Image (cartoon, rainbow, N blue to C red):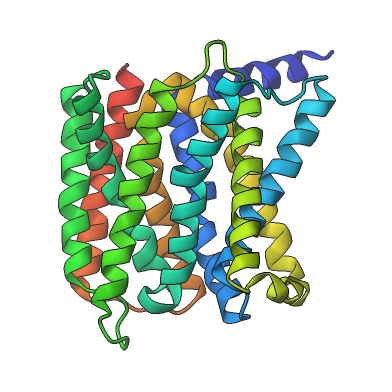
Length: 306
């Protein structure tokens, strides 16, 4: 193997052990869900179907990665419980709510709701006695939360009627994500393999979403996926990449650091929504986004110091 190849592998290894690097990459990939989801909804793909696409695509890719490594999914009671609970509160419920809310709130505004999850994760972490974040990290989270409140005061995309019901349902997303962040830490199986956890949880979420789609009559609309092949491929690729690194970030960064991916994702979602999809938001939203960016920088700095 050449010196250049060894150096590249060494760089990748360092990046996968760096909470700050993983935070930025995982958050950016998550942020792509919002514009891609809006495009899918514009093509009349039902929310449960598109949420199932994310988990199914990720599960297939990750199970394939396990097969290449000569590994298989674990099906003992501990892993099955972990897969089921994680699938419900971290993937199925939040994604179904997100893709249902996007047509009503806009993709960027829906993405911004994710920035509430870090503060809620801190509250839940303290409640169950997990590690207390560093002072600088808490400061970054608090500043990001202030920015989120300013964004929320803008009440959605210009030209759209304020739909408080959907704003209320949207708030359930960060609540569910925060609960999932803490649960995945306190109930993680000993000696867990990050890819096994990601594959099993997404497989469970895919099964749950497909069953719900069948029960609600949305499954028959799955044929509409053929109308958006490019978006479908991009979504599967982004999801597989995100989840391949998601649990690695959980392992090396802990629940509070992991919760910050929502803040990074919101920044990506806003850029994509405004630059690529023509969404427009009032000035107070942009001020809030700038404050959120400051919060992200402080949190990343805290992790680099650690």
